Image 1 (spheres, one colour):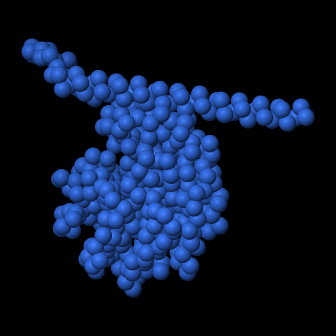
Image 2 (cartoon, helix red, strand yellow; image 1 turned 45 degrees about the vertical axis):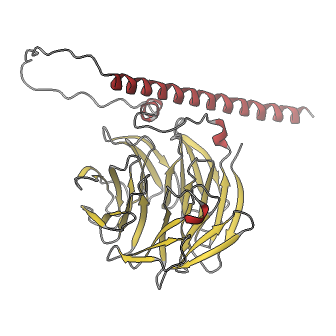
Image 3 (cartoon, helix red, strand yellow; image 1 turned 90 degrees about the vertical axis):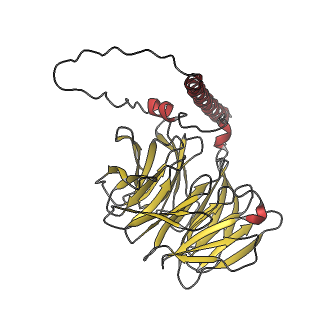
Length: 395
């Protein structure tokens, strides 16, 4: 049940800087130092289509998550000059190109419904854009150094940004205000991403560590000494139970967040790894490196997990927090003598509220069931391995 490498692709004389999956399609997308975006088409026989990106190195790439057909993939990419390119594979026309920042763009990320996207840059800002109109909506200012990443929450209402200034910020998309500030951290922050539940974030640092933070009480609930070099990507598995990290130390690491430990270390790359991504259901993941090698992996261990139908706002966050021994935030204390409690009319909860609470309880039960089954499977696997060792030794 270990991860296995399904495909290996190479682009000569190219340092990959980003990779991603195409939804509802086997196709893959990369970008790199050859000033191009590469569409790796795997539908039947392998074929690669290159989209020229101008005079500067491409730095990041993403694909619209609402793409429904293989033929109408919408690809957004950015370069060191601060320009964004929009390529539509179904239309034979020149790409839309516009200047988003006055310096290098470090990340691009869509909302789940593809109605907006956010960019981060060395100009110390993150920006929000409407899609498909490409209309500028707002700038998020507050960091004092390069903004290394900006990512939407699962509901699209909050953005988390990371920066070379050793801090992470949460922003309300509607008010454009910085809601929360996390810093100073031990090193520059290379990535910050949301957990699928929306209230937990992961932060990856240049010193090779990454942490999981509960934004409700600012508590670091897990910290991992992950890599011996800067972490280049951090992403949660869609179930929320695992995390994927890649690093300039040439290692891929998969982390078990329920048990709080390293699950797999994979050393298949011979050059520093620059990016890594899960696909949309977590059954596969991608990694790419600075020598132009792209590897596609089959997860395999996700088959141990009973997949819940969807992630809601109230799904696995409390279960994950409980597994990490996280106490809820203490209640606020008031000063002065106790005040008499005013008489209030007691109202029965609405049917919608009751239904929402029942949904929450059901989601928690499903997550506990999934976790129990996963642990049982692992125990069985260890027993089988022990039996094989004993059998070999007896011979």
